[in-house]
Each structure stands twice: as structure tokens, then as C-alpha cells.
Length: 94
Image 1 (cartoon, rainbow, N blue to C red):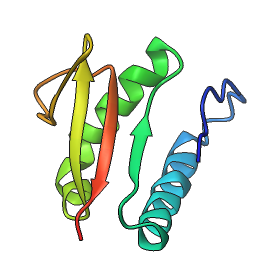
Image 2: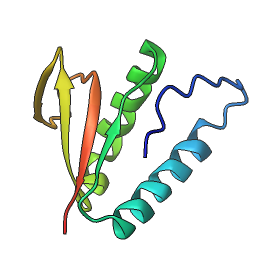
Image 3: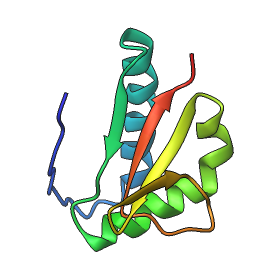
Image 4: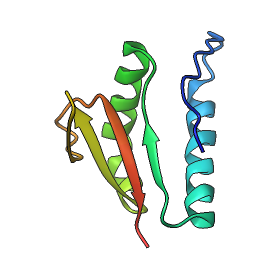
């Protein structure tokens, strides 16, 4: 499944609802495909900042279901809320 480069911008401030829906879909997806890796790659700097803020704020809850890693300047590493990542990978904890 490749949901790459969704550049839609509605400016209706529904991002919390959208991110909640995406999170729900991620949980459903890994329940159906437990070995899957979910990659989250922002399409611009605005989304990169948003995704870093979401992961930082919710990393405890996310890490209950997923192992989180991230990439910084091409180097993949375990997630650390003190770091600023270019993109993220989620691995379902079975």
C-alpha cells in the first residue's frame, strides 16, 4: 500500500480529525497485515514539523503497539522524542 505524496491542502483545520483517522487505519492495517511496515514521509516541511510534534506528543501511546524508528539525513535510528526526524517507520509489535 503506497499513499505517497498526498499534497491536498484544505485549510479547514481538520488535521486532528484526519490524523486520528489515519492512526485508526494504521492500527486496522497492521491487524490485517501483522508483518507490515508503515512508512510516514511528509511531503513538505510543514508536515514534517507536524508529524514530529505528533510523534513527540503521542510516542508513549504509539509505542504500545508499534516499534518506531526514524530517519535523519539518511540515517535510520530508533525513535527518540528529543530528535527531529525526516520520516518515520512503524513496525507492529506482535
